[in-house]
Amino acid sequence: MKIPVTDKKAEAVRRMNLLGIYPETIQQFDKEGFVSVSEPPIGAYFWVQGEELDRIREFEKNYNALVYTVVRGRYLEFGTLDAYLYVSDEKEEWELDIENIHNKEAFAYVYNHDYPWCSEFGYIGIKLTVAAGLIRTW
Image 1: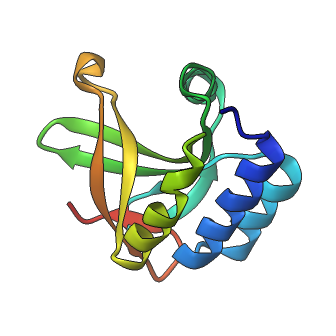
Image 2: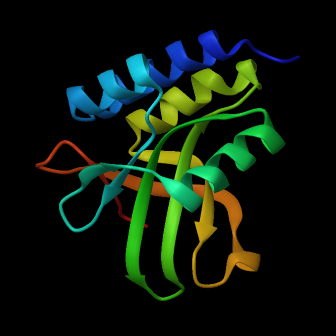
């Protein structure tokens, strides 16, 4: 069943608050629809633009999802990886997603910039930084 975008956005804001993301970033997402990327090493947030935003919008369209933030990992074994944290249409899974957040992990779509054909869904470890952004821990 397709969930209204307004419901997914409210759930995304809930998750962002639980994650402890910088309040201005949450407000920009909630009021303006801006998707931000948390950049290593300290998790500073920047707006996603251009081709990267187009790729996110295509992902949202293909999977009936709403991406609320991106956690970027650079200089990893497999290159630069963007983990899309998103709210799906699977409302019965939302509480599990919240439980995962409490356990410092998230189910994400991970886009591989260097090897796009290796992009995949899976769990990642996340951690709040001193800059109120997120970094990937595993």
